[in-house]
View 1 (spheres, rainbow over the protein chains, first blue to last red):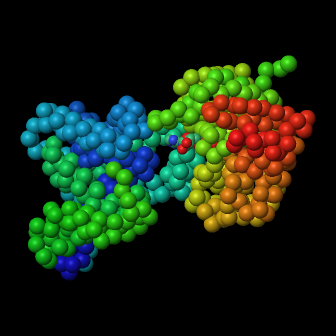
View 2 (cartoon, rainbow over the protein chains, first blue to last red):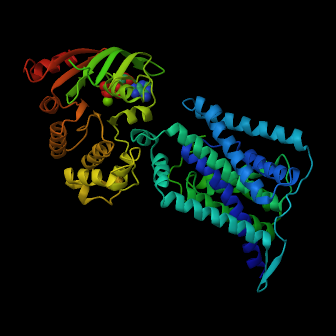
View 3 (cartoon, helix red, strand yellow):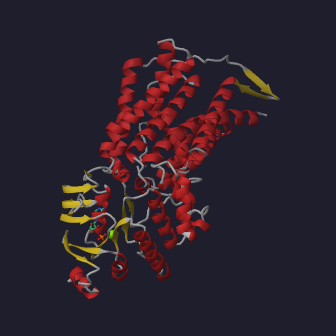
Amino acid sequence: MILSQLVISGVATGMLYALIALSMTVGYRATTVVNFGHGDIVMMGAYAMLFLAVGVGMPFPLALALAASGLFLFGFLMQRGLMAPIIAGPHLSLAIMALAVGYALRGVARIEWGNDILLLPRPYAQNAFLLGPVVITMDDLVITGSVLLLLLLLFVVFNVTRIGKVIQAVFQTQRGAQLVGINVPAFHCIMWGAGTTLGTAGGVLLALIVPLTPDMGVWTLVRGFAAMTLGGFGSLHGAVIGGVLLGLMEKLLGFYVSTVFIDISGYLITILVLLIRPQGLFGQHATLRV
Amino acid sequence: MPEPLLTALGVEAGYRSKQILFGVDFTISRGEVVALLGANGSGKSTALNTVSGFVRPSAGSIRFDGEEIAGSPPHRIFRRGIIQVSQARDLFPDMSVEDNLRLGAWVRGAEIEADLDAVCTSFPRLGERRRQPVRLMSGGEQQMVAIGRALMGRPKLLLLDEPSGGLAPVFVGEIAAIMTALKGRGITMLIIEQNIKLALTVADRFLILRDGKVAQGHDVRTGAATEEDIVRSIYL
Ligand SMILES: Nc1ncnc2c1ncn2[C@@H]1O[C@H](COP(=O)(O)OP(=O)(O)O)[C@@H](O)[C@H]1O
Ligand SMILES: [Mg+2]
């Protein structure tokens, strides 16, 4: 009974990690650059939502649409203005550039929101349902449902639409894509923006269940990174499965072994996977270019 | 005399570490097939990549169809009608033959079905394997996919980088037949080819790249140059 309860809440948390890992993977697959500032972008998305919904008082859907578009633009321009000019250079410069952007965002958030602990009010009643002996909260349902919807949407875009074929083509070989006339630098900007938009969705869902702080980006990045590593770096379905497994591991080890595991599972998974099976569950390449 | 389709003048290009092309001049007329010969590492691929925009020239001019294209990015040059089959082929390995071919016409977006049927008719091997992922195909078949994918873009100038390179003898013959057929259809081509015999069968004219410049050009039809002459001017 406790086990099924833990599994339910583990899956709900895991879906959130899956979304964050997936949002990082989209940008990574497009550009082969890991966005080390992604955690802070997720944080920014959450604050943007909070600002628009609470500060300005917009209705929830409008605030969400605006926050998502704003962060898309941010990701697009970040790729265009900061990453693209140095993309031919060493990968380390790109990693540091992304890290610097993340730190800058964190700085802005600290100045603007200081150390206040802010909560995004839920746009739904905080109910809970009993499924046999197991409690399912509205939060679990909203998070799991939203992520499943986004996954379905992405699946359709990738596998059914014409644009999905182009995305897959660029993922498989950028030079090949250029040989058929695809504007690969523009593609980078769009996919980087898509990654930050998905990250914003993750940040908003996260803000429903945990208080916002300017430093939540670190927490987020570690989870996303661990899920990606576990699933296999660069694998889309790997990121999703890795996220769910990470969520389960945190809840199960946290309950049965020690609560410490809720905080250290992410680090632990990253270290163990890199040592024992660097390609993760579904990855093809053992090497990670930072 | 009409303006040539492509005119390269004083083109200099290279990589961060070293310059490879030191003032390359040549022209290609409409409907002409030109072979670019040269020793290994002489810069043939670099020259082709400079025309298609993958390598940015540091000096010189490349005019195509009346417009300056030197320094334009690859996707712009593609849209003008210069389409390249690169040395590594750069196919989409996990996609089927048909998807690879379709992507070749993605930018154009129209009349894809008709062109797809035409390519599958000209390359029966591809027609029989439409659903097969290209990574499971032999080198020769992959080369056909690469050429077919380029044709799907309806090139005004087709650049071929060692189309017979590394292929089994039976495929070298097939590729030669394909190039001859393309020539028969009036497609303008610039071909890099290590197999001089093959190059001379297909080409109207050849250029030799040496020391970063085009050292020599001959009309194949006059029979002025023998194979030995050519080998001598490439290597000696
Ligand atoms: N991407 C690159 N970066 C640096 N040097 C390169 C690159 N590609 C080719 N080269 C060098 O440029 C020279 C010409 O290469 P290439 O144009 O491929 O010759 P070819 O096609 O005639 O064999 C060679 O010395 C090669 O090592
Ligand atoms: Mg070459």
